Image: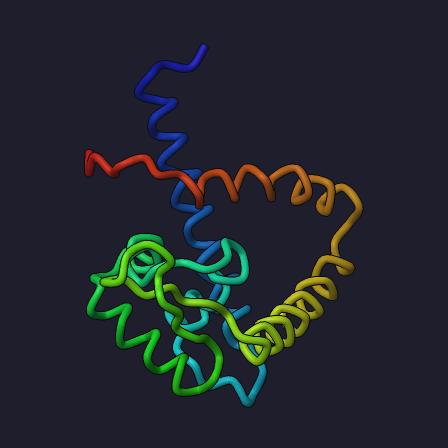
Length: 155
């Protein structure tokens, strides 16, 4: 039976391998963006967040993306000027603004998603059925890790 220290070492090694692989895959997927898309990754994250979660306040967007509200305000301004989001009055709090994805924003992220999914699908087709099955089982686990709100104890 493995000791606690050996288990921690094996988890640290696995964490390092996963981090390296996920970061390389992320960089590769970033390169697959549509050539006409010159938005920053943070701006794209806002669009994808609005698409996934619906209308959000600037404060909620800032919290989701872990940035300060003034930074998010600048990002939303850039996206609004590009016609990708619209600002709406908050239904109950006149001090807040609700941000909504426009049809142009939806079109942009859909084109971006299709392009990246197409590239990744071709890479998956090159793998064995067993490797694809491992990834199929790992995908929801990786999503849970990514969605984790656990604070980092820096231990």
